[in-house]
Length: 110
Length: 116
Image 1 (tube, each protein chain N blue to C red):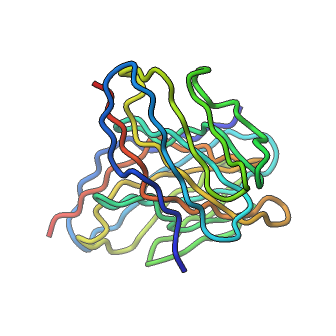
Image 2: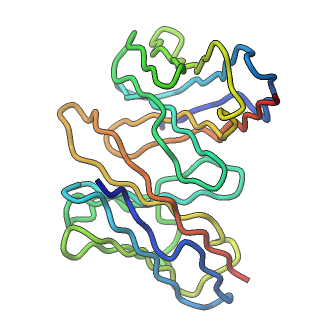
């Protein structure tokens, strides 16, 4: 069945550092891929998505590219801010339901 | 416009008690999903509705879990005879169908259930 594996956390960085959170998937067919973010005390919010191979999703300075050959969708940001501290979830969608990774907790120190 | 809303936001139940969790999807959203998120884990799929039809309930962990959406809008997730392992955040999401299955699911704030 479909599954998502995320880089284990927690991840702690200094402000303005470069961020990569790894995500790989196993799926049949051609899933859509997503990154969701959960800020402290809030619900899941869509951060970005890509619906086919080689698509790049981007939002708020974050980017991720759908790599079919490596079955990956790594999240990157060139310069993180304290306000980026949150839990990040990689997810895929086949037919209908979302399948999530276990989440990566990111803490950015000033 | 208004997002997905859920109530109550927090629920404490004694073991064996029945609970009902409510989800109000975004107006006009045809699809509605329930997920369970255990502490420190990613959400896991429970069940899916398209309008009032429950098309997939493969994720419901036992027959104590029951979901309904009788008029194709508001949905209720009911857990009977709650057990401690039911303690989790229950998330509701809604979406509009798009060609090729490329729709985005929008999540509510969740209901945090604690079973004592």
